[in-house]
Amino acid sequence: MSMKSFDCGTLIDGIANEPIRDAVVLVKDGIIEEIGPQESVSVPDNAEQIDHSNEIVIPGLIDAHVHLTGKQSMNPFQALTTGRVESAARATADCRKLLDAGFTTVRDVGSGTALGLKAAINTGDIPGPRVFSSGPPINQTGGHIDAHFLPIEWLDIDQSPHTRSNWFSDRILADGPAECRKAARRNIREGVDLLKIATTGGVISEKDHPQQQQYTDDEIAAITEEAHRVGIDVASHAQGSEGVKSALRNGVDTIEHGFYLDDKAIEMMLETDATFVPTLSVMHQIVTEGSDHGMPEYGLRKAREAWEAHIESTQSAYEAGVPIALATDFLGNEFTPYGKENLLEAELFVEEIGMTEMDVVKAATSVAARTIPDARVGGIKPGNHADFVAIDIDPLSDISALRETNTVYKGGHPGEASAPSYREEQ
Image (cartoon, rainbow, N blue to C red; front, side):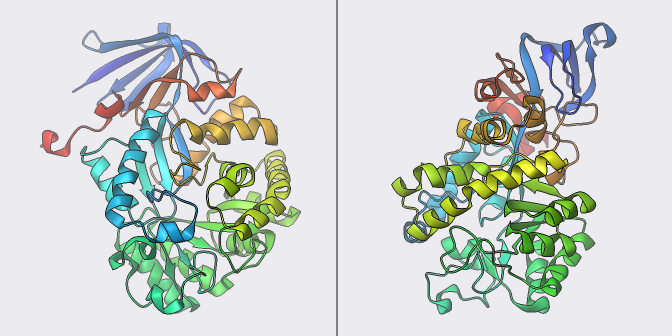
């Protein structure tokens, strides 16, 4: 049995509206056992004492929308020629960067490598955050996830995506309720933590538009039915309001992006208790730097058209009380690098949306945890994993303080020691 006591100058638990001063967090075998002011927590004599009494301690951060693909370019043709082994090696390095920056949990919503990374992290072979992945996303032929620039016969749509290589492993095309149901079952067979679909067009897909609805109600319902039957969520890439509403009407749990939200779409989010995952960061990067990093002209044009609407939609959702999760949609390349730059989303929430710093901390912790199937992440409370970050500057005064991590704990262990080897435990 391992018992540790963490002394915290200020504890922001990610749940309450007020921090706790001079707090203690008691951890047993990687799980939080008790928290509170020093005078209220009885620390066992055999507990290892760890001093952060001059620092602010917050929950481990969550990025609720990443792609652990290891691809190094926004140019689709360059990404196409990168081998899977190279991509997996780069994604392994990305996992280390995320953990070092304070991200102890991430939700991967579309890659062919994330499930393998998750397995290697869970056995302690590589350092990284807790990874929860959808595996390859599912979409209609000609939809956002289709590779519009390739001949359709190259995609070999009848072959299992899990046996394809590189680019082709990161997508599944399925049409009609029967194919959609089978695609969902194939991903579930692989052990995914959620399913990812697309119910609208997008920015980086060549021949569609964010406001075009994709998938019929019957197709969406077939996928959500299969997911909910085994107790996992469905996330939908949904940028236009009609695609958002069709997703919500048919059981989708999280809305990714939401550029053009009308009043009804926001009302439906509240009625269904959906979580909104706006991913402002990737749009900001496309609009400000996309032309320097191989982004196709059609992607630049659509992003510039949508940017102001994206800000306004997120503001409206926030003002209405929709739960909003921090997420970047980053890929880990030079244009959207993993690490401290994942905190760009927190800064945009304050600067562009007008969120309070406390609400941003919650968006990165307890609200983002709504998208994660492990209920033990996202807040410093008894029963949760001992995932937290110590920093010098109060993020409630300056949200950019989240970039300045001193020590990152995952399961009560610092840094690379955060995942004890499965072999050692045996």
